[in-house]
Image: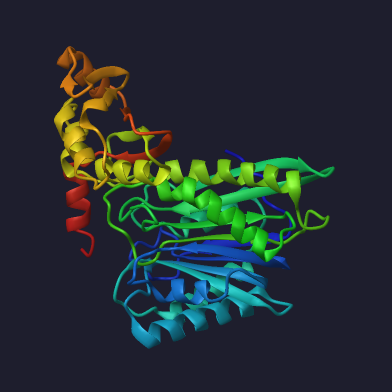
Length: 397
């Protein structure tokens, strides 16, 4: 997939020695030649990493020249030294960006509780600066620099006409496990050459993230590091977007983030199924989200899907302990279009047919409908397999 890179950005990724595998990039640099506006959305975990604290204190804001990325080391639970290291990493990024002054943001992911190897990162950022580009290869290298247990890099983009000029949006993300709503071990970086005010950039990103990245889960484990950043450098020209033009930009941003969000559970560690969970008929959207999260994070639901087992009781009971009041006599449950449960009682279905529909395709759809109101949500998760256990049991080896 070829993605139009927004004007005014250069980027690259290299291996600097954090990861043992020399073929895996672990250091990346994005430079915005015109200083950019930046917005961010971050983990709601009370234990948050140094780069989260560093970026959160600076966004929304303006005057940003660079984003530095490293993988293999999360710089989380590293105390005051971790905060100083994050600030130093940002300084190194500004220096690597070359001419001009400005601020930088940092993204780190990997093992928790180890200090950043700043000498390696500094050398890596210098090498990135030597090979900065604005082509597809540079974009892929940068996306690869934030991967940990991901098996593929994750990219998405859109180009739209706004006010007689082309505006480009390009996004990258990482994530395969420690994925839970609000948010999971995931990093996201979205670049645009649109002109946005800091407040508008933050408003757009916060709204879009709530409906995309916050509606995915792999294992229900909320990370210390999740961050999504939006940079807008205005290189496409024109004044900051407002009104209908801003709304059109937000719609395109939603498409980009939606594609990136779905790509994360699709690459979930050991996953053999991607589960789309549609919850409707709830008293509110928050109620629907709470039920969806309960079902999505249930190990018994996830392992049933992994085994092709149409075990509707696990789904219904997970909804029941979500802490949301509802009338159990008004629930309807469908799996891959097959009605399994209706109005408080099991429906007649052929188990072998439902099982085959799960087993024979990667995508599984679960529809839970209640009789409480108009609240609804779409949530995406994965199954749970023995391979997930193996990957995480051997994470440090």
